Amino acid sequence: MLTRNMIADLDLCLDEQICLYQELLSLAKQGESLTDNEDLLINIQELLGKRSEKIAQIHQVQEQLVSLCRDIAKSIGYEKNEINIYEFVPLVSKNADQKVQEIARLIKEIQTKDEQLSLFISEKVEGIKQKIKKVQVGIKSNKAYEPSTIQGEGVFIDQKIK
Image 1 (cartoon, one colour):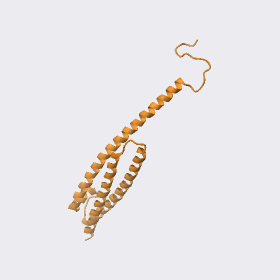
Image 2: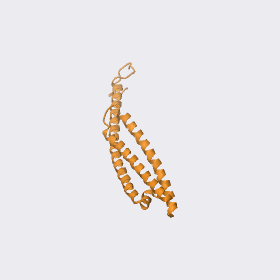
Image 3: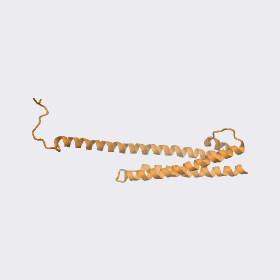
């Protein structure tokens, strides 16, 4: 009886984890809609903050799953010391196998969206680096043609000074 309740709790944890991964996926999809505007950095920071919260929630549910799996393993006499919950859960519950597959699918989709967002951010950073480099070159050439100190007499660079 105790094991059935634990398995039901396990299914609930998996459902909660699926919901959290779906929310994380929707946040990853929001990253696609980021455009070049003045608030780009703020939007990225907000998006990353929300993602961090979801990841922390997923981590908490993951810890609950590990704890439940250990308890179930002890109650049924499972012999292995290390438990991989994504291998163990399908052994305990057939319904959970589909949920584990759904979680794996969501994770792959999130990774794809994250790679696209990372590429977008890398392109923006590279563009900013180019703009900074252009400004620095402009500053150097400005100093060369308009030095801040007044020269008393002219110095010719092309001739040797005797």
